[in-house]
Image 1 (cartoon, helix red, strand yellow):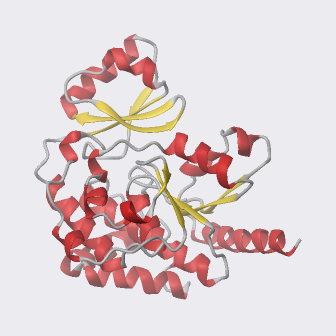
Image 2 (tube, helix red, strand yellow; image 1 turned 90 degrees about the vertical axis):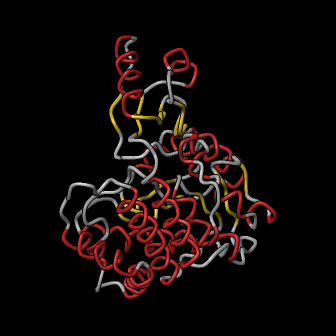
Amino acid sequence: MFPGQGAQFPGMAAGLYDVNGPFTVVMDRVFDLLGVHGRRLRRIWLSGKDIDGFDDASVAQPLLFGTNCASAASLIARGLQPTVLIGHSVGEVAAAHVAGVFDLETGLSWIDRLIAWSARVPAGGMLAVAASVDDVAPHLRGSVVVGAVNARRQLLLAGADRDLDDVRAALTDAGFTSFRARARQPFHSPAMWIPDVPPLARATLHAPRTRLWSCYAQQPLDDGRARDPSFWAGQPAEPVYFGPTLDRLLDTDGPIHLVEAGPGSSLCGIARRTRQVAHGFSAATAALPGPDAAANRAAQDAVVEQLAAGLAR
């Protein structure tokens, strides 16, 4: 599992850099491909400081993509070959790279185009709400839409800042809890529709080598859609149905041991509330649970040992 916008935090997974070979190789490649901006990102990331603008797409998106891909490379190098992949938002782009749909350079070109486009979008963001889609529907107004369904009563709304403030006030009056997510753009709203992504159109896209569940399509990607540039270009404007898609994955491909390869444990938290994991039919483990470098290295070791022991039985 690969997390997306909102999962980022300063110095995420940086403790593996220069310690874990496969991880370091991927991160160096990411920074090199991004040129001058990549050198700046490397300094920000290794500093571990929560700079102003850390949650902006220009910083968070490439770092999330990079750490997701680098962590996956590290786990695969240690013998963990995934049988199925799923990602949230930019995490799905990382999952597609790991599945072999496109190379690292193409994925970063997509993100670079997203960054350029997001700079033209009116100031906005996302609002996390403890409510169902039906609960929030009467309170949506202006540019605000449901951007992600993470669980039955766990949503992300997206829209312009002023509209989000109005909707938050209305939801508070109606008794619903909400808070602003770590995003400076209205991801997964119509404002983020990118007219064209030339790097994708020029690239050769491939059928997934590993079963890849899409939280936009809410099903495994077939070869045609995986190789369609317009599918990937439209993702920033489409809602993410992570919760419903994960339920279907667990029902179809389970029992399974889910590993959150990217930073944090937000997706594990969602997974552990599903019927399949809560009742012990499947399991969920975070490989990079937090900011502590030693804890992350220990977590990766534990994941490898736990799954190796399971395969040996």
